[in-house]
Length: 121
Image 1 (cartoon, rainbow, N blue to C red):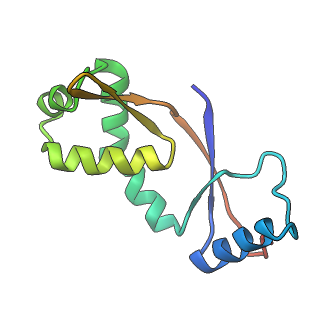
Image 2: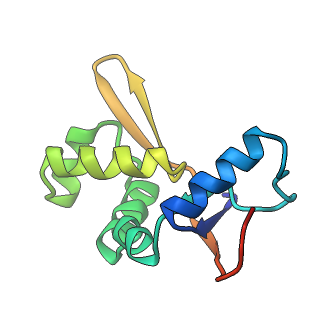
């Protein structure tokens, strides 16, 4: 599975960067993170130990639905759904509809974090 390069950047800096890109004043470097977290705290919430275990369970058990994953993990479906939707927004998992079920698939297992205190744009 591919590695996901993530960055840490404040909302304010991210907004400045996005505007600079839109105006053509900044061109993202090759290999620059495509996914940005607002803080280390935000990243740690998404990639906490419990969620890492959830990803391992999905890889190992290959559940065909959220209901099946709920039975395997003991986590409530509302919790699983919210967590997996957040991970899907960051490109960590894919949620594919198959008939009446939603099947989770892990897209990324390795992460490289990049952050600094300098200007990004």
